[in-house]
Image (cartoon, rainbow, N blue to C red):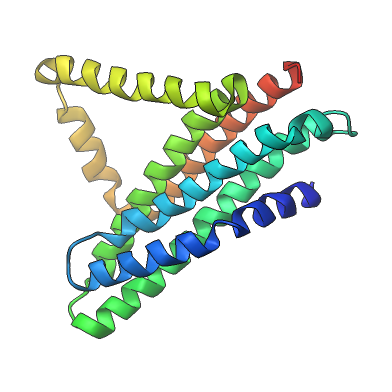
Amino acid sequence: MLGFIKKDFLVMKSSLKAMAVMLAAYIIFTIIGIFDFTLMVPLLGMIVLISTFSYDEQSGFNAYASTLPSGRKNIVRSKYLSSVLIILMCGIIAIIIAMMTSYKNNNIDFINTISSLFGSVFGILLVISIMYPLIFKFGIEKGRIWIFLLTFGGAALMGALWGYLDFSLLKQFFRLTAEYFYIIIPLVSLFLLFISYKVSEKIVLKKEY
């Protein structure tokens, strides 16, 4: 499985130059107050991760890997582990940018910054949890179509029901759990990733390559 993870990182290496240029631009824009790096850095990580699926399809890697002992399981395991590692690295980069911005502007609230970063990482992991099973099931191109349909379909449904929903219980729950925010978010993220992983594994074990 380590070889599979190494392969993903080698694939992502080809995108590092473009990512570094974009990251430098976001740092500059963050310093002058145009962008919020706490969202953009994890988002860049997710974009680079998605590129590994395209490589796997174009090269026929999954068809080859599926013939190896535990190859199908390792396809899924390595993709999720690579994703967690990259998102963690992006989180560290975001914290470093926060320190740089703080040194430049001398007005960064680190509590709000870390809270915002936790929320952004949770959002990215939620997207990954939904996206990966769809990509494993339908492939990268069709998977994107399904993601698009689910995203806008879900948004349209929420928009239609928004006026009829009662958020008082949800707000009360958030107030009661606010002090456990830094524990709940990682646990919920890991739980969603685990469920997503098991679904993806089941899909890959049954898939014909």
